[in-house]
Each structure stands twice: as structure tokens, then as C-alpha cells.
Image 1 (cartoon, one colour):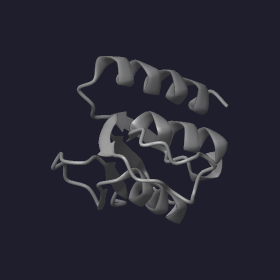
Image 2 (tube, helix red, strand yellow):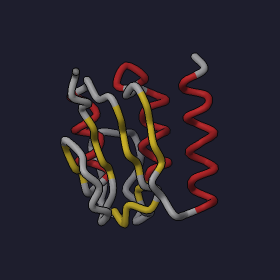
Image 3 (cartoon, helix red, strand yellow):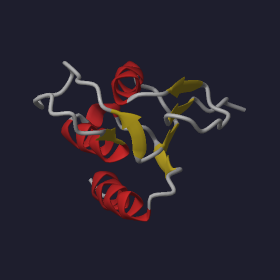
Image 4 (cartoon, one colour):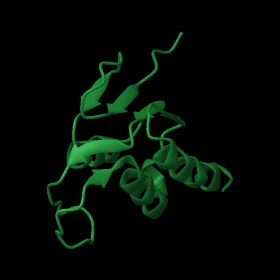
Length: 106
């Protein structure tokens, strides 16, 4: 039986995963490696840093799981087989679900 390759992008949750990324930037780096079966994704990443990986001015806005979803929309070649939202933010969860639905209907 194949071992699932799992990625967790979350600033603090401890969920068993093959790899854990605590920031938006580290999460994007991990996604670019490709081959992920499951992405566990939080919305509120508490990440206020800039990133050279996306075309967005540094503006002290928090990078979120929704931003990860928007990046995946732009670069669908890195889309994991499945995305599981692990956020407690109901508004963020709904926004992310909308993008997930759009991405997996392609």
C-alpha cells in the first residue's frame, strides 16, 4: 500500500504530516516540490512577511490559506490530489472552499 505524502500548512496545529510548513512562504516552497497527495491547510497563518514568489507588494497584510489557494489557482500544476481545510475561521473556510471547488472542477 502506498504511503500518502501529506503537507500541513499551519502556523501552530500539530497534525501528523509528512512535512509541516509554518508560513505561507514555506508552504509555497513545499508545494513547488510537487507530488503531494493531501494538503492540510489552515486559513489564519499569522504570517506578515513578504515573499518573492508571488507578485504582490509587501503591505503588512497577513498571508493566509486563502492566499495559498489563489497561488494554486495560478499554478495548478502544483495542485495536490486533495485539500483538507483545518481552519476554525468560518469566513476563511468558505472562501477557501469556493476556490477548491473551482480548482477540482477543471
